[in-house]
Amino acid sequence: MTDTMDTHVVATVAQLEALYGLPGETSLVKEVDHVTPDYRAYIEAAPFVALATAGPEGLDCSPRGDRLGFVRIHDARTLMMPDRRGNNRVDSLRNIVRDPRVGLLFLIPGSGNTLRVNGRAHLSVEPALLESFRVENQAPRSVIVVAIDSVYFQCARAIVRSALWDPSHHVETGALPSAGQILASLSQNRVGGDGYDREWPERAKQTMW
Image 1 (cartoon, rainbow, N blue to C red):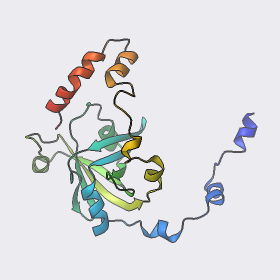
Image 2 (cartoon, helix red, strand yellow; image 1 turned 90 degrees about the vertical axis):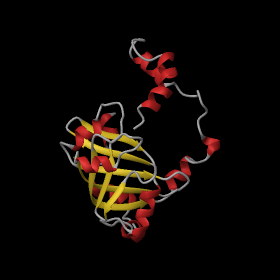
Image 3 (cartoon, one colour; image 1 turned 180 degrees about the horizontal axis):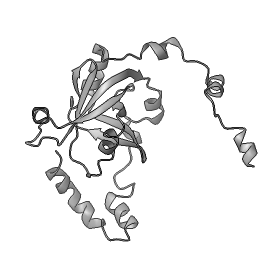
Image 4 (spheres, rainbow, N blue to C red; image 1 turned 90 degrees about the horizontal axis):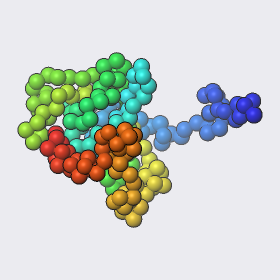
């Protein structure tokens, strides 16, 4: 059974290219090593970014959401993103200080196209830089500085297939287990529960930035 399964595994780049063929010109010409005026428009319109990092323990992909323009274009080859308050696991940051490779996926509500950025990051705690990202009287504890290697847009097929922005496909409130329910289940009710869910909105409001 295992031998039969192995014959159906794509294990080399040559096999992959034989299966899919080579990309067309439109798939290649869109990739550049800097932020163009068109790509600037996407970054400035995106309130949400998925940040992918790698480290000795494995991979991580972290959601990053903020006000429009929260990813700052320092120059055509450099992006800056504040690290806002979260759960203090610092998985992404832990990875960055040991392996600078990062990938960013920008999502713009209502737009089918997304924007992808690959590069190398470091963390800065320069006081003036932190202060420049202050919101609601709260500065971030660090800023992720990304040196760009490549930028390109991703076509709309994934967004169209998923109907991501179509309200008729949105999950109804209460259709999924709540954070409190998940925590209670995984901790044998030591933490979480209904109290966690009731208190979370106010706690999040007080610790948003």
